[in-house]
Every structure is written in C-alpha cells, then in structure tokens.
Length: 428
Image 1 (spheres, helix red, strand yellow):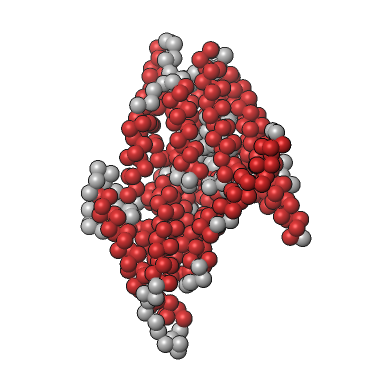
Image 2 (cartoon, one colour; image 1 turned 30 degrees about the vertical axis):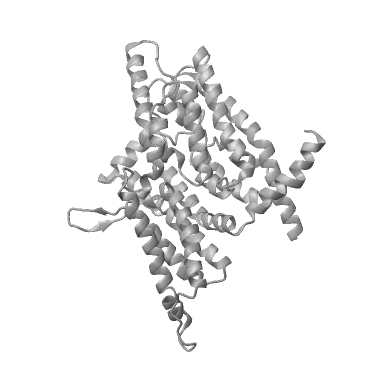
C-alpha cells in the first residue's frame, strides 16, 4: 500500500467509519443485540444435546420411554433462539431511548408492541390467536432492528413535542411514566398499523414477506453452476451483516432447487451412474458454511486459541464448541459480525472461497461429489465431509477449507483483538 493510500486510510476512511460506529443508533443496535448473546449460548448447548449427529443417539432420543426427547430437550432452545428478534427490539428500543434521556422502559414496551403488530397472527381451531415463533427469532431480526430504531425515534420525537399526559409530582414515577407514554405509544402503534395495512394490500401480503418477495425472482433462477452458488452465498452473507438470517430468508426460494439436485444425485448414486450435480443442499451445508454461515469456524478457532484480549479469550471458550456443530449465532452476535464493517470482508470472502475451491475440486474430479445422502447440519466437519461424499476426499477438502478460512480471518481478527487488548490495558 502506498504512503498516500495509507494516509487516506488512516486520516479519512477509518475515522469516518469509527464515527459511524460510535453514532447513537449503531451503538443502540450493538448493545441491543448483544443482550441476546447469553440466551443464544444457552440455546446452543441444548441444541447440540438434542441434535447430536449420531444415528444411534438420535434413535434413542426419539423413542426412549415413549417420548421424543430430542423435542423435549429443545424446549430451552425454543425459549432462547426463537426470541432473538424479541430481545433485539427490546434492547434496541431501550438503549436508543436511554441515549435520548427519556423513560427507556416505556419506549421498550412500545417497541415490543410495534414489533408484534408487524407479525400476522395465527388462529387455531378453537379461535385462539398465537404468534408464530419463527417471526420472533432471527427470521424477524431485521424487522426488529427497523422497528427498534425508527419507531423509537418516532416515539422520542413525540415525547419531545410534549404530546404526553403530565401527572402531578406526587404521583409515583412508574404511574407517571405510564401515562406519559399513552399518546406517543398510541401514535407509534397507529403508524405501524397503517404501514401493515399498506403492505397487506400489495402482493407481499405481510411485512415479514417483504425481503423474500424481492429475493424470489433473482434467486429462483439459480442453477447448478459456480456463479449461481456464489450469488446465493453472497446474498446470504450480506443479509447476515444486516442482522437478517440469510439462509432462512432465501430458503423458501433456493432450498427446493438444492434438494431436487440432491435427490438427482441420490438416484444416480443408487444406479451406479455419474453424479450429475455439484451444487446441492449438502454442498452448502458441509463444504461452504463450515461452522455456520460465513464459514466462521476459522474465526471461532482464532478467538479460542489466538486471542490476547481477555474479552475474546472468554468468548472463545463459549463459542468454539457450538461452532464445531455449525451453530454460529454466538460468533455472529458475540464478536459481533452484524453491522461490523471490520469483519464484513472475511465474512463474505471465506464462504465464497470455500465455494470456489469445493466446486473446482469436484468439477475436475479430485474430490467426490455429494452422493445425495442428507447429513444433519449439526454434524461436525471432517466427519460430515466423509459422509456427504462417501469418500475420504470430502474430509480432506474440509481440512483444507478450514485452514484457508483461518488464513482469511487472521489479519482482520488480529486487528480487532489488538484493539480490544489496547482498550483493556488503558482501562487498567
């Protein structure tokens, strides 16, 4: 890098991004979503117990004592993973309102109500309403972020306009704050209600469908090509960087194509024919998203074994185990990677390089294609590579990819780790 480029980077670009990162709204996003990390780690542990990838263990869990223990063990997972969006909107609303020095608890309650208002409720046979958990988890995270920011800003603006009911000083603060939130809260919910009605009048039908609606056309035409695979994963990574569960967001469009390709390989394998497809569901699960979306197992290993900062050392002890089972929400929200421009490049580059290396290796025949067997997504690498391809070359490829992913994340991780370490030393 030339001296002129280095000066521009240090004097212009980095200060610019640091200023953005320190802005009121991004700080509220960061602190709000960090609130979900403990629950994510707890849920990860129970998910591993429930879905440990050994067939005999899964059979035991499914039929022991006449109960499906895999489902029972995942109750805590449902109570943690599936409320990520709810925790996020609460945390973002609370922290943003707090930064404006208004009653943060009241703003948080309004934010939660506005978030629930965006979700189409379901009705059971008895006529009772219920909220789909899927809309409260990472699938609804982007909407939670938008509501937490914009509706809270709108609420704060109304409060600053004195559209509140003021109670005498003798009234307890809890009661006074509740009445003060009445008009701003009602107008905030009214705004979300109008937006919801407007969206329901379009082909999108509901607010949670907005993202999938716009992605359906471009991704629906993807085929069994290297370019198609790269486009899919690029979109997944970009969505994750904005807090949207990318794989879930596009699964309704892409998964039917990938499962069909997997089934064609299974049929060809059973008949002893040449396998026709490289890009299949196991291709992405086992050779692209190693450690989870963003191929974050490389980052998790670096955090666990190469950190200087105390914060990262502690985080590494918690995230490395789930990462081996391809559960990377603790990494994504613990580092964090969401809305972190410093980690955006490796988060996108690592899985794209995995695709390129895996596709090329299978295309020229030095690595076996996926045989059509569906491997549980929680199966650790090395094992999953062998099972997916029915050949040791699959395991070798995964080892190569993990080493490559570590190399891709290394310099970005060290920069972040050194920064945290310096902050810790200054704090002392």
